[in-house]
Image (cartoon, rainbow, N blue to C red):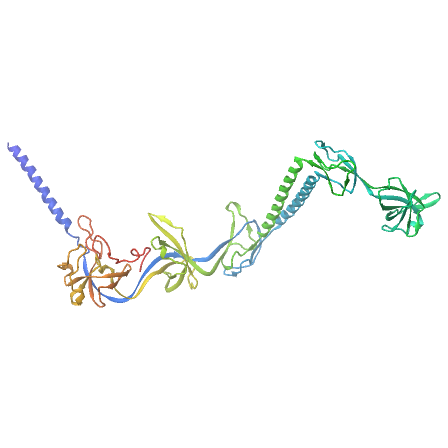
Length: 558
């Protein structure tokens, strides 16, 4: 029994001890550390002045345009024509590279193109020869072509005889023939007929033969056939008052055997024996898949050769390096005497040239503010590296391609500075863009505006219209000022423009009045980790239009 009582006492004592420790712990935890910040009441005066809302950002200065001057070819650098710091015009020659290999390539390409052109022309000629035409005007005297047959190259297909003009082969005394010439006109007398025809000397032989003891020369006279002259008929002639030695014999002017000039199948025959044809008239049509394919292949080869020559000339241009833009040479890494070798790294960088007529940089703007950015908008720029210097730029481009990170999308905007002074590429700069501004406005610290657009005004500064009862956000009329604002009265105001520091008061306050607010010096929490105090009561920011434009600008405000 005694042992049981002792055990019970021990249990009760332990319970009491736990309770005491818990109480002490709660008391200790509820106390603020010695170095904890506390809420303090601050006061400010209602003043007049300008209030601006700005979007800020940072970027790095770049040249307006910058290019790496590179070589597309290998070789020895024969000459360079510039130094670092020089200002070059676009197209100015910077380097000359040994181009012997390129010149040799051009020569070979020109030869290949000429060969390809000849092959193409021959293929086209063969293809065109599938259309068999008459070489002269005359009469068809023989037809050896038949549709459906195959004709080889050189196969005789037709015979065309020209009988409209007859050739009179006649002899003149050699001495008399010396006065005759091609084109001389005379009279031809047909034997066994009284008809007289006009003839024209076509040819006078350059030598002579003996006939019946006399030296004679042959003269060929062309006579238009009236339709009665046949091959073998005879006639005499007088040319330039010179008579012939004896009668001559008529022959047909010309006879042509028409042959196939390319192998193919005879598809169509257009004439029969006895037909009158004109020079160039279509006699027959052949077909050949080989000829058609040969033209296509030759055309492709010709085009390839032409492209190769064009590429060779373009490559030759690459041996002269010119400035891609008008700009300043920032660096020069290759000089005359160096050898360029692209190797596995591709293009060889030779120099850097930049357009320094103006500089630019890019900042990122939050999606909530991008609609406020306009091209041409003024931008104020400063640089930590250049103290007390302020530069003026403008928005040159507002991109519509955003970048999303952690659920927030930002858009890049490009800012250009034309009068950039001592700014150089690579410097970090800060930009400020005014997106809203009001002048000569009544303003107070933003922290002085409490929930429900309530401001606590010093009792001594109250005006008559401010002394009426003000309903608090909970809907209850104010009956007692909170202890922390003792000596001040709650006044409802209309808030206009605001930034992170100040708020414009459009109505409800007067210039010079004193207002009170809680200035939070540091984060303060209770034992449950909840925030305590602050310039704005818990549960919301300004209401009733206290903030314009959807809240404070993103990306920074001043």
